[in-house]
Length: 112
Length: 205
Image (cartoon, rainbow over all chains, first blue to last red; front, top):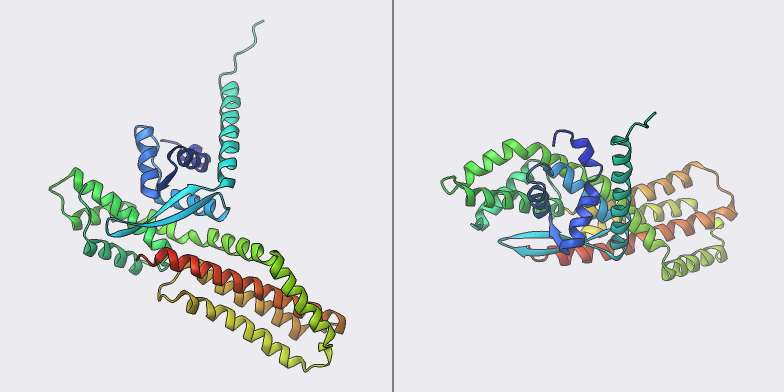
């Protein structure tokens, strides 16, 4: 995407929404899911994704499970009870924001 | 999907460790991320070998990976402070802390040698900070426990500075010592709880 700043502001909401749908996910899986869903328009870098995941974990919104997969350890993230409530709130806020933005951007000039 | 061998995983781990990703909990996640990306690439381009794929990946993504590893400090600090706060306000901790403070008031500690309390203060900090890796039983560095040790030192050092530089009225001295014990109680419980948590998580390594 040409303006990554627009994307950065919504990254935590996108991550929370994915976790709400998938149950649990690991870092690389999240990056691929976003890339596939947006046909490559949005690409999440490691430098943006992991600080977001760690912050959400520190805030008690996500919890971590570590499992051995294919000769290595893998950290899976899932929503906590607090996280489920927070996700619904954040999605609702984002929807409201997009709606307001559309009203402003596509404002029709008054006739007469 | 072509899985990487244990030797190839070890190679990625060693490379990241030498690049400055010192904490095991952070490195584990980075290793999995790089390995997943390489497996996908090797699946897509069967003519490509592991080392070529690794070199090409690192040229493109190393900066972003290291940025991610370095930024973990801020969220870990937040997690440490929130964990200590959570322990401090648990009923048993408040009761034990309150009990110790009441005892200190009754023994009239103002008459005791002040230096003794400096030593107790320092010993508590050092004990708390060194206890953490001992409890963990593994020789690896864990970001949370490392930062917790730092906060254990810092909190005790602030108490030490207060006690050694400010002339505190006798009535307040008991309160300060009570707070010192209470703070260390919270740190100790956090250390034990989180050491057990990380030990369980990384025992599979």
